[in-house]
Amino acid sequence: MSFSWAKPYEPKHPFMRWVDERLPLPRLVYGAIGGGYPVPRNLNYFWNFGVLAGLFLTIQIVTGIVLAMWYFSSADGAFNSVEHIMRDVNAGWLIRYAHMNGASFFFIVTYIHIFRGLYYGSYKAPRELVWMLGLVIYLLMMATAFMGYVLPWGQMSFWGAQVITGFFSAFPLIGEPLRIWLLGGYAPDQAALTRFFSLHYLLPFVIAGVTILHIWALHIPGSNNPTGVDVKNERDTLPFHPFYTAKDGWFAGLVLLAYALVTFFAPNYLGHADNYIPANPLVTPAHIVPEWYFWPFYAILRSFTVDFILPAKLWGVLAMFFSILLLFFLPWVDKSSVRSGSYRPVFKRFFWLLVLDVVLLGYVGGAEISARNIALGQIASAYYFLHFLVILPLVSALERPLPLPNSISESVLHGEVEEAAPAGQTKRRGGSVATATAE
Amino acid sequence: MATRAQSAEVPGTTGPEGEGPSDGYRRRDFLNVAAVSFVGVGTVAAIAPLLVQMAPPADVLALATTEVDISKIQPGQAIKTTWRKQPIFIRNLMPAEIKAANAVPLSELRDPQTLAERTKPGKQNWLITLGVCTHLGCVPLGAGEGENRGPYGGYFCPCHGSAYDTAGRIRAGPAPLNLMVPTYQFTSPTTVQIG
Image (cartoon, rainbow over all chains, first blue to last red):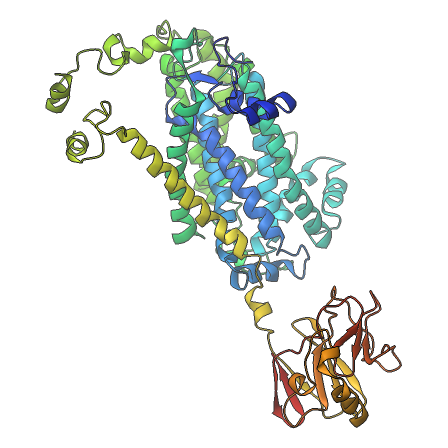
């Protein structure tokens, strides 16, 4: 895999040579995230978010395994066991808050990662499978997050389970039996809670597995880059280690700082107070919304209010599922041969409109239902589909992209050759200290 | 610019632009060591809560004492109760059992202790021990009526054949120590607080 100039693994220590001959695991690591994986030299900070997603997946798995040591998946005991974790278990409050907010941060970095791919055309050939595997991970994340949110068995948990499984009842004929089968009852109860716990524990490991496929598929063509221009020779790349390990490392520190700030100082800011009320099958909370990362889809779901051939309920559910499924076809919807949005003036404008649209959908999804919000949601939902189904194909057919740089190195250097020359071998501009050393 | 100028003034760091080491160490070396050390400290701080969570939680520690009413235990009888979820044997020894225990020379014992050392002054008939065999943790027989009390007339562990005498001391079999005497006190003539 990767480029012809990728450095092969050459173990220096005899023990590592011994291991490498028997189990080439160090070789695999070296070629995947070490000095043997050449990466375009011009990546900007938006390329840090894949590693961050991996980091938060790890945090979620580690804190989740610990929580599962104390959590009871029983309808009678679940809520109390979470309170027990919060009050009695040593550092339990910290581990649970880390898990709660870890989920939010996992989604934050994943959304930035997805929009990075949308802007820079990372879904285009030859990275279609990278994109599609990423979407599979995203769908698995949504399923995992939803089931995890049910586990504390508070009011939001219970009614979240009721509403989300209610989606399936929208399908004609099979809908209601399907919903009852999924819940193992007529309403969320013990059976649903236990199976959600089982799957919530399983799916993260499935995500980890698909992540390996995602990275494997990525490493065949290598990373895309802000110009979208293919890597041409060794001058266009840097070895992953130490250059990108260092950059990812320091940026991860920065993001972990933000994560720690939220976890310690506003641990419940991203949650709902109602979920600290034990589940009550007889009372629905007045303002029921999913977690913030589902709001855009929730807005699409709520935008269908009138029966039109099909019942409104079915339209909402279909539109919500389709809003994600259509992303799988993106590599064939956007036919422009230019990848990066930086060289596509029309596409760029519509990209930012889409971002605004999704933010607006998010706002509507989290807001209370009112005539104004429903209208806003309907417009924003319509625009979402319009973007992918009409605007994008038209733009890619009609747009005249800007001239691309000949190579990554050329775009980085802007013709200033001396900047790329080794230190001390060329004249420096300005700076009294620098001048002094040069002499 | 300011940092460049400062670093040039600090001895033991580097030349102004990061090259030209004055003493073999570059500014980058310092940054590397500092960054990696900081990550190390952070990792330890992050792992600590994952380890301390395994220790007994507050509600388990809150069960550290148990009060037992012993007024109904006749001489020769024993009861089983629990303390920290572990079985406790409370036995009201008969005079013959006390005599038998005191008749054993300490040199014969694997874990030498007198009955007086294992009971409270003036309450030598009350033998209070953990019902946990010191070999591998089974519950010995002998506290229940009609149970096998073993060759030494105290307790007998059916798992691996450890035999305890009337003072709960190990006499035969693989167990290394006498049955453990927990911390306890008489809060009234008929009440014992264990723990």
